[in-house]
Every structure is written in C-alpha cells, then in structure tokens.
Image (tube, rainbow, N blue to C red; front, top):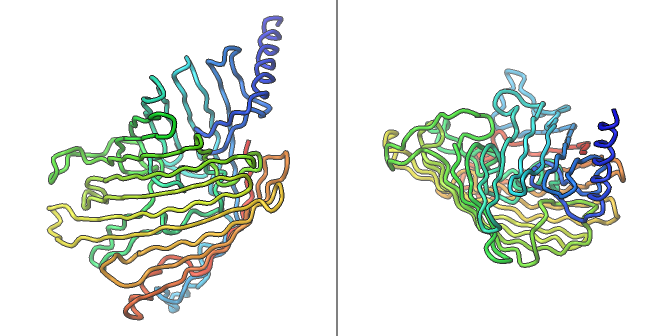
Length: 404
C-alpha cells in the first residue's frame, strides 16, 4: 500500500511539473492537448508519457435539396438527411517512450466496420530531419484534413473536399473526390533547417474504412497499386499549431505555406489513376485565423477499361475566423468546386457563415454554421440541374462538442 501511495505521489508531482510548461501536443489529430491538463502521466525525466483524450460531437442537421433528382411520385422530400447525428465519439490515448517513439491509438465508437479504428500509429524519430511513422493516420494532403478534428473552423469541412465528382452517366460508378483522410501506410517526415518540412509516404489508398491489405500490382505502370503522397511545408515563424480556433492560443503569430502531390494508382476498384495537387496557406495571428487552399485532380482510366477520356477537376476555398470575445469566434468561408470537370462549363460556389462559442473551463464548444450552394456558368439548364445532385442547396448545422 505504501508503494502504491508513493507511485501516485510521484505521478501527481510529474503532472504538476508538466503544467508549468507552455507546450501543446496536436499529434493525436483529434484535440489539442495542453500541458495544463488535469490528467496526464509523465516520467520525471520526461522520456515517457501517457495522455488519454476524448472527443464527443452531437449535432442537429438541416438539409434542403433542389427538386432535380427527386421523384415526387415516391414522396421524395426536399428536406432529407436532417435530424440529429453523432459524427464522432472518439476515445484514445497518445504519448511517447524512450525519447524517440511517439504513439497514438483512438476508437471512433460512432462508426462501424473498419472505420471503428480511427487511427493507430507509432512514430520513430532518428533526428529532426528524419522520422518514420507507421500505421493508420492522416495522409499528407490538405490543411482542412490535417487540422485537429475538434478545432476546425466550422462543423462541416469544405464541400469541395468532401463531395464526389461527376462523370458521364455510364461512368458514375467511378466517383473520386478531392479529399483524403485516414489511411494505412508508412511515411518519412522531418524538418530541414528551421523553416522547411517534408512528408513522403506510401498508403493503401483505400481510406479509413479498410484495415486490410487488398492491393495488387498495376497492370499499366507495373508498380504497387498504392497511394504515393508527398507534402512540403514552409513555416518561417515556427511550427504551425494544427488548429483553426482555440481560445488558449490567442497570442500566436504563425505562418505556414505548403504544397502537396499524390497519385492513387488503380483506385476506384482498379479502374482509374487519380493524381491530386494542392497548395495551401494558413496564418494564425493572435485572435485572427486565415487560410486558403487550391487543389486540382486529374483522373485517367486504366487500359483494361478501354476508355480514353481523361477528366480534370479543381476546387478550393478561403476562410477566416476572428475571436470577437475571448471565448467567441465568428467565421466566414467561400468554397468553389468544378464538380463536372473542366470539360464542361459551370462551377459550384458555396458561401458559408459560422460561429463558435467555447464554454470556459469546461471543454465544451458550441458551433453553428449555414451554407448555400450556388451554381454559376453552366451551358445548359440540364448541366446546371445535374451539377448539384446529392448536395444540399441549403444546409445548417448546430453542434455541441466536448473534449478532454
């Protein structure tokens, strides 16, 4: 009993010492873990740590769709996919060991199948210039996805990243999208000098819902049919916090520019090769957050499909947030997507407004947003009608989040 008491006292001492630090840990990809947390276990020399975390999100959703694509004979309603949802119920832990290893594991109980395991990885750091990360984690593409999930500017990510693209009717089984998320793979990363960083990895390219090895060799390129991804960053003012709004980080001045490229070989049921290119900029200056991204995707078919058509898509957004009060952040976003490819006229333009209220000293965050889908520049009314099929013209979300 005495030894247990001594161990508990030592852990409490390490927690108190840790709270005096000003460091913030965002490697878990879910929430920012500050050193002022009431519970995290760390050895006296700092070589070992264990930090549990939790994120719960519940939302009220309203989505109104255009008449196009609805069959009134079957009582299909303009209002659909509305009501209450539970996007995330994440329980996880992260930490470090032996000075050179960091690790993370989290379960998203609101999902099923392969998506139940949200992420699981370990990272071995040889030096600042070189480390190896292995497991299931976020692919190195897009500032929006690489932000911690609990600290995005709005409850919903930009539609230009999440909406599936449109191809001719006979090809509708092939619907790649701009965004990439969690995936299984291995990645080298590090810092070059004070300002530059890099990430280069190989991933399955099957996304967060598949935890098994299902890939083959490319018949056309004679290489493994994997996702090959790279990203380069420039951060002249130090590492950019992976947040788009945190009331504890209102004295920062961080700027980051990044360029990324990847190719998913024989994606979409081995039918296409999808190449993506992106450029992003983010600036966090005290109460102000500004960011913008532009991305381009080229889709070509494998030889076995006997389709010579190639498709090019582009999209992007600019967004900003400002803390009008210590716990209140207002947000604006303008999002565009060339969903029907550059071969057809017309784009979707999607303005959105939002507000975040952080309830002090509770871990609670109340968020709300509204988005409108506009259509511009289409050659025919049919093209205009088809371009926003499956995407809500009016959407609103109110979300309450708790993080620990």
